[in-house]
Amino acid sequence: MATIKHFEDIEAWKLARELCKEIGMVIDKGSFKKSFRLIHQIEGSSGSIMDNLAEGFERGTRNEFIQFLGYSKGSCGEFRSQLYRALDREYLTKEAFDNFYIKAVRISAMLQKLIDYLLKTEVKGTRVKGK
Image 1 (cartoon, one colour):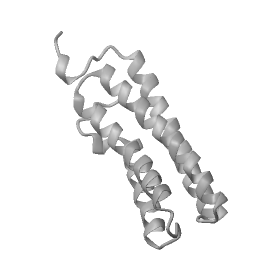
Image 2 (cartoon, one colour):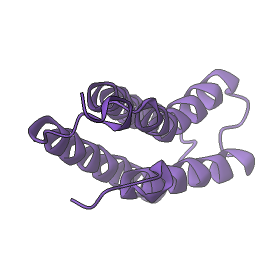
Image 3 (cartoon, one colour):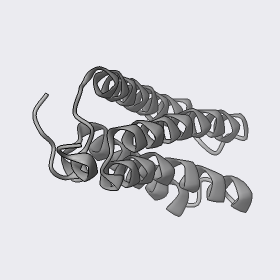
Image 4 (cartoon, helix red, strand yellow):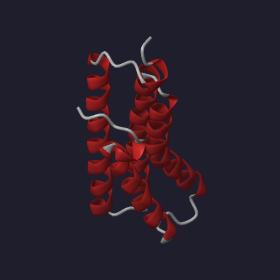
């Protein structure tokens, strides 16, 4: 795996950013009516996917990065669960649900692959170079 210098270069982060933007656009069109709690939750979980990945990367140690990738992966699951709530209330079409769901599953798989790689590597991180 090539050395990544910025979290913005990580494909899972790029896809998570896209997912966050797309769900925000659907919400902004009024699809979620006045379900402010669900809006807050789904915006929070979608943003948390990319934010936790970024925070873990910036902490500079392999173990913290792995930990925050786990949080990011958990947010993917939370987001998918919230998608079901939105679908059941007919805030999302089945087509929109499927699009978001597939992306979230893909991101989760990408995060797991990154976790698996980091668990196997001997690189400790930028904060612990030479230690």
